[in-house]
Image (cartoon, rainbow, N blue to C red; front, side):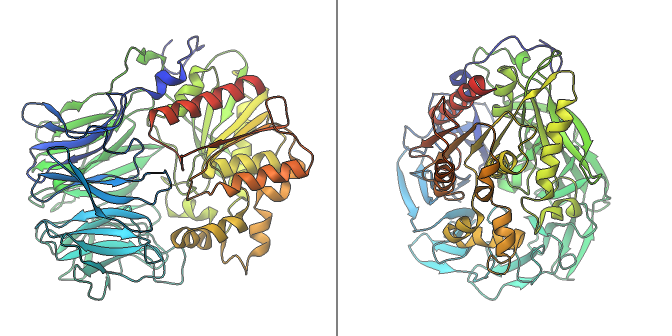
Length: 610
């Protein structure tokens, strides 16, 4: 078939799709000569390096790195070791280990909480991590001689997804919130010896600020914020305590990396669920969108944030129908070379469908963007796929789950409901203090919009979601059951009061930010919990949950199952609902066997029920 058009006549076996070789966490070495990455081409996740001179691969590991990844990697300062996260049980209580070139591994940081490696000292003396082992997610310094120092003591969580160590290793830039406004996020700088953090006060209170990279002079930072609604990128100068903004409002932009000479900045621009890389001339603020296929582009980690030199930058890029590639982009002549290409292992790539960006109006007139994967011309079954987060979005990247569903014959709609990222601060904040409210109406309206299409049988529309998408599946089937024939809730939340009580401090902070204090807003927590609406359930639901999930504990599935049984409903293939616990698994997985099982469970349930 051709991309995105007519009838899909060839299934792809779950194991085949789950086993398609993939690479993860590409990271450039300190000297810019090598690329490290995880790859499962052998049938198991292993760690490799690739020479950027001759393209030769070298395998470092031999079954002694995790099969399910829980974080990125960082090179040791001397380039002779690579630090990685080890999460044994899928519960994200990961430690930091190092692997040497000879394949030997050893633990470097072992704690009782979540630990996320953010940076390696360029002098090779310490690591900077965000960790919960002392309570809230804060910054910690771990000297390689065994000394540990807590650098920050914020009451709110430190954003462990974004932080940067200065070129001399003396200061750490990161983001957290010390204001009373839950929408606020500020950039701070703290000395690596733990002196008092300094708030840079980028943007207005209530805006979300972030940091991308340091400039080589150690005095300027590439930063971002969304004071004007759309995210923007700019240059903060510590000497003048001022920001010069580069962005001109052409889309939501976030800072990524600075070139080694400090003359160029890499920024990611998002519009209509696609992300394109943009290079700014720092002196003139002139911008250039890089010529890569429309989809999802991203910078990579390592030396100079993916810049190898002043004119060469590494990017990952994927489209809705083309799997991820690693590209080497020459800024002088706009030439592109694929350093790592996608592998299809005998699967015909033309079977994958390129989604169409569509819009529809919600009940209050708000325009909702969505990705539509059309499987056929004639009426047939369809799936609505709400993304997780909720402050995230489904983008025009290659999605294994959605391509699998299309291969099974389902038309799929992936709505970016209010609260999603990619459309600015105002749209993202519409979900604050309204979890389980109007964003669920947006999702319901997506099903109603689908039902009007010639390619969809309105009596065979199901909902499937993971994480917050699983929460949405629970909510839809109990609060808005009319459009649905069935649903799958994968690692979802069903009881917000119980979720708060069991959550780690940084997850408690998220719930408080989005729903308010649980004591002061007890009615809201109850009203927006699907477990309190089980009497409305009309159609079969399959509850799938990993027993070691730390974000959405297994109790969320068990509580909902128990509530259904108390109502008199029965479990089983011929029952009112189905229930599966995934042993030794957490909040999703990169492990091939675990991905295969998830696909098989999904396909079997939908085939029988829809």
